[in-house]
Image 1 (cartoon, rainbow, N blue to C red):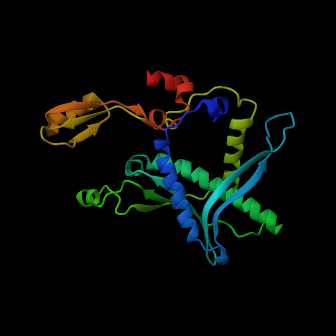
Image 2: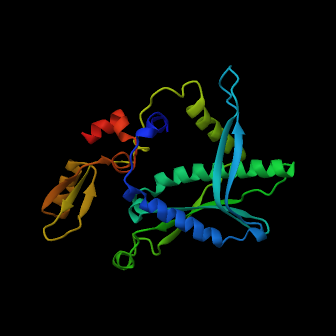
Image 3: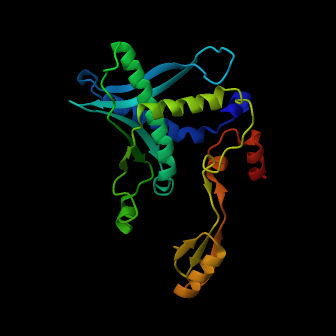
Length: 266
């Protein structure tokens, strides 16, 4: 965010890299048409809030923040907040747990924003509570043939529902405060490198391979473990699969302004 603020006018994107963003926008538009606002549902609505910094002795103007709710489905005694996302099968299979942390935080902030807005509108704390959070994933590269070949470790459908944990009100507010202080507090101008998790780091692995077999027999996290496994179980050779920072190398628009990005770009 900080590098985009400093170098946003120098960022160049290839139009081909925006194709999936266009696909996502079309998906949101079509799903919006299927909502039921007349029955109390919320569909593609943006909410706004204000936050006052707590850590500074200097008075600051309240910080405006907002979030767009994709869908809140209303029942007799429940409200389900859903966020629709487009992703790849690889991300679903390999990054689900890391992604769930981000989705959980995002949806809990949307829940907090929605509830504060509703309470203000009702002038009461008895506004109906969000009861469940979830994301619905659209797997853009899902293949039926792949599922037939490996039904145990491949999603059965191209649309997957992922339930998320709903935080208590205090936990939502505490998380919001931490992020506001990080981005706008006294130390906001300090430079900090993205964490390995934020970079989507994929570690170096070693694959035990057999001749004439395209798939690895086993993939391990050290060469010695791979050698030991091959001696015990068979195989012809070990193939190193170098690690990479997936987000930096393929998805970060400001990597050429970042010291870490410059290093991995050579």
